[in-house]
Image 1 (cartoon, rainbow, N blue to C red):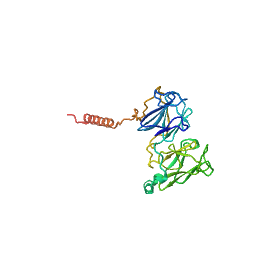
Image 2: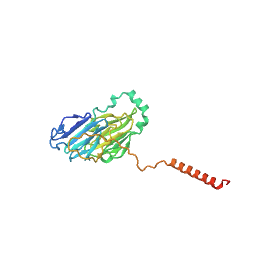
Image 3: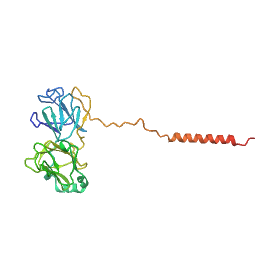
Image 4: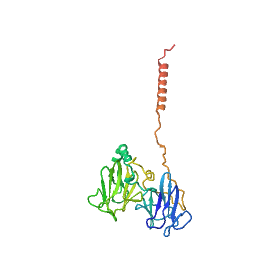
Length: 284
């Protein structure tokens, strides 16, 4: 995974397992120095559990048009705005083009994963389609035209911007206009084979491919959807760990009292037997 700066403020930075601080003051945790930011404006981190962003100071940070106060999980294709500086999160590898996937492998995909492809869908991450899903079982046209299956609005969008279809058992995206700009996991493409977790960017509109088991992208398949967390704001470059899920036992859970009830019943039966013996036993 790497960080790119669309407006040219800095050269691309590869984000290996570790952390990269971005701010205006070199040193003190800031690895990428850009004028106009806070001394340590944000920290990008990458680890075994995925990638995330932390805001160590009261700085302005927005991920895909959503403000972040403490921490946000990242996926390839996210656009991060640090005050006036844009940072795009890109996967290390360009998404495969349809011509680069050999036909026999694609046909095997059709045989082995037909049900997975049939259930594939796009889920909106921003814009008018936020939270909505578009099934991909049939060809889908995305654009600002009235005949589009997903009608989008915004600068740079064409009447028929792109189409997503299923070809030989794989989900394929193709642009429909020479002027159409589409990014998959941060990379500008004319055509690409899509996989689970891929993020598609069309202007200001963003979608994520949801099809568990469909050629999962190792860079983004298991990355959680970006979310905010209310954590204490660190004062220096933090050593951030993705929190583990905690499962607590229920202190109010009912205990199994069946054994106690059996003991009480046995004691009652014994008491009844002794009473009958002393009352009804023949007296000598």
